[in-house]
Image 1 (tube, rainbow, N blue to C red):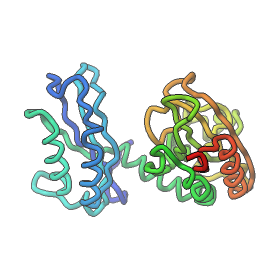
Image 2: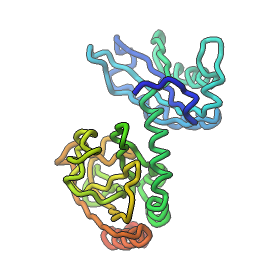
Image 3: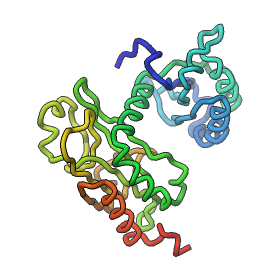
Image 4: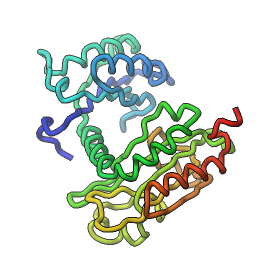
Length: 284
């Protein structure tokens, strides 16, 4: 998607990247782990939000790169220095430089896709507040194993001119029965399998979601809705993602449906405590 006017956005995501063709940082630089805490605090002190780091990927020519994404409010995005970059970028780059080998060149640019993704996700979240808020109230107190440090989020997966489609995911805890997996709760509208074959959804392409997966749609469909919630155990590639690494990575799955989101949230919370008693904290 081509963005022509950054003034349309309340937040702009910037990407700070270096390439390492000689692999000076080593085979496993673990930059994400080493920089996450400091960069989170530094970005917050500048009025920004640290998003993520990628330290294990490479380009098609096998050149490894390391990249960090930081979300800037519009005011900071617009306040630039002589180099044309936002002033808040300088202290972020200075810190990251101390964590990298000497001689690597920076490429720093706004990230169009993630900026649009954040704006769309914010709009999606607001449009379904009547569904999402009851689940946050009911489930956020149950989170464990570090999930309470993760913000639940609505995420747009597909978009066309006539339709946005996404999910709302809340990470609950690690699965006590499957090592290395998480329990993730996803809520949305109940959709029949043929929905994705009809207009305008047919233009969205392949979702890689199983039938009846909870989806959030914009514009929101008119009339009475059936809401659904699904809890899935799986090996997910990253936090705040409802897509597992592979089809066989999914384990246990439970699903509920109701017309009233408050009733649905209460029912899900009650059943989750029965399915996984450690969520109540009584086993501690």
